[in-house]
Every structure is written in structure tokens, then in C-alpha cells.
Image (cartoon, rainbow, N blue to C red; front, top):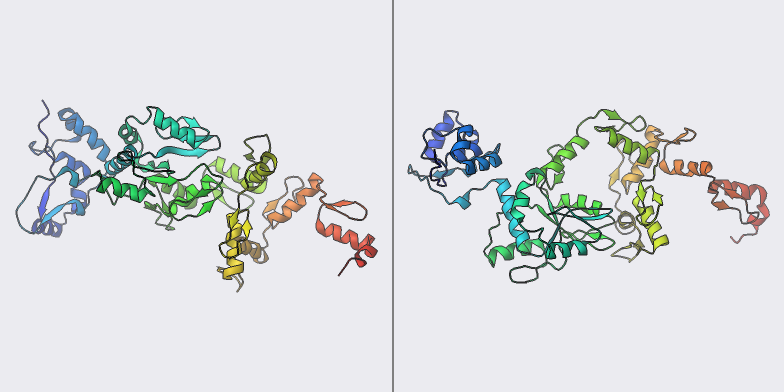
Length: 450
């Protein structure tokens, strides 16, 4: 049996028909599904073919049926007439599934501009979105995509990508239209230009899957609100604030893709099988539990310097090392009010709250205490719960504060950084040095200017 001629159709209901069938308990949210709509395109086949029989009747539409599997066409997709007349023909552009809309939008934008597309940024560099090759610098990746053939068949590449996790990162420096070479300041202007000037079809109302970044600097600025971050991972997580395509119904946090929402729900709202014996946190996966224990309680140094074998407990100390040892340009964040400079963006935020806003917006649930930051509240809460969650892995002593544990670890490392100016004796803690001075060098203290 040869495939018959296919026409684009969608069932058209009159308002009276919908009201009558609704009163009978027929809900068109379920009645008109993606599968039924697609099958109805074979309007000259009576009765409508089944999924399996369609495989042999029309392979092209069977493949499209697989793309639509599980997609529900809501009542908004049903054409409603105020009269009893019925029209079967409809422009194919008037109906599109979410997946097909994303495929079209991403393809149209990437084919008609000079954006450099990448999957993510790792310590070893950038991964090409099209062919997965790795490049040390974003400039090398940009040259690769201009000179090579990896961009051939963009639509095919995007179509094969799982729709739930589709997110294309792009480098937006010197962004311009590849049709007329006009420079555009941002993604919204680029889309408007392609639609208005070159009549390109871009479906609106489906959320954006192209996420803009500007790379090649020591800091990462959000291309939407201008916020600065120390790492790519930090600005990557921040972009969920602006691209809230999927919302967690338990806490209201937004995410770029449905896949990231699933990961969030699994980690934030589902109890796991691996509880931490030290701080009572629970993890679903053993590797996440082990990573938590290593970093939080054992203080394992996982941040390796890319230029030498040195390792550090966190990114800040690794960056400080790279500035001191390898000549990297240090990060600095300037206050817009008093022009004070800070090494961390968090420190700038705390400074602004304290010095310029006096914003004590963090409250204790037990007593009237108010403070500026969550860190201060956690330190305060120790007075109420008395928990000692930080344990020394050498002598098993435990402390309520991480800072105290770090000071304690100097004993085991023989880190005597506090040196007496009179006799040269070293001490682990500053309080020990002060006690030594009061006991053995009282005359020296008395002669100091007051």
C-alpha cells in the first residue's frame, strides 16, 4: 500500500459541540493528544490508523509521531468557531510542538549569526557544541567553528539532542548577523533583527534554550543583569534566575531545562540512602556523600592548580596561589558607593549591607537576634543547639565552628605562625602568644605606646 497524499489538518470544533461534549464528561485535553492530532492528518483513512499500522503506511509521519509521543495538545490548540461551520484545513505554521519549536528556534539563530556555541567549560577548556572537540581557549574554538565543517547540519545535530536537556551556551563577543553583518548588542536584539529584517521564523512563548556568556576574562559577567562571578560554574548556576523555563513546584526555583529541574528535585527534595553521621545531611548517591565528607569534614584539597602540582581546599585559595606564584591578574570587586575593593563578590555584598544599607535582614527563629548574613546566623545558632559538627581527623576532637577546627589543625601541622617579637618563640594561636607576652615579657608590654 502506497502512502496517500497528506494534508495538514486539525480537528475543528464548534463552541456548541465543545460545550455539549464537556457536559457529557468528554475532556478535550485528553481527547486531542499529539498522537491523535498527527493521525488525523491521514483524514482520508477511515477509521484512523493505529500507531503500528501507520509505520507501514507512512514512515515519514511515523517518525514524527515518535517525536510527539506523550505530548498533549491542550484546549488552547483547538480551533473554536462561534458558528456551526467546520473547516479542516489549517496553515502548518499554526501548530508546532515544543520540541519542534526549540529545534527551529535554535537552528535559525545559530545558522544566521557568528555566535560560538559550546556545551560547557571545564578546567581543561571548552567543548564544541557540534563535534565535542576540546579547546584550551574560546578564541581557538571560535576559529574552529568558522574554518571547519562541524556546523554543517545544525538542525540534524539539535534534533538528536534530548529535548529535556537542550541548552546551547554561546560566546556573544562581537555578535553580528551573518546575513547582513549588522552588529547586535544582545540576544533579544538579534532575534528581533532576524524576524523583522530577514523574515526568519522564530516561535515565541516556548522559552529560550540559547544561553549567552562572555568569556576570555578572569571574571564572568551575567549578560542579562551585569552581575560578576569568580567562576564559570557560578555564573552558569546564576543563569537559572533569568531562564526560568521550568519551575520547581516545591520551592519555586527556576531552571533552564527540565533535566536540571529533575536533578534539583532529586538532590533537594528527596530523601536519600546515605546520611552523613557528622552533620545529618542526606545524599542519594554514595559519590555525593563521599565528596561532602571529604570537602566539609576532612577538608581534602581537590582544587588543583592547572600550572603546577599544588592543591587547595577551595577556588579562592587556588586563585590566590595563581596570582602569587604564576602572575595571574587578581580579581577585584569595587563598591559603587565608596570605591572600596574586595577580593570576593560575597565580601562586597557584605560590605554594602553593613556600611551603606545597615541591612540586618537575616533573623534568628529562636531569639530576637538579627544579622547581615547566613554565615553569621549559623555561628549564632551554635549558642542554641550546641552542635559540634567539625571533627579533627587526627585526634577526633570536635568543634562547633569550622574556623576553630582550622586553628586546631595547626597543632598537628606544627604551624607556629605567631612569633614573639622579643624571644622569637612561635605559637599556634594568637591567644597563646598574648599569654606568653603577659607572663614572660611584661616590661616589654608596659613600654609599648598606649
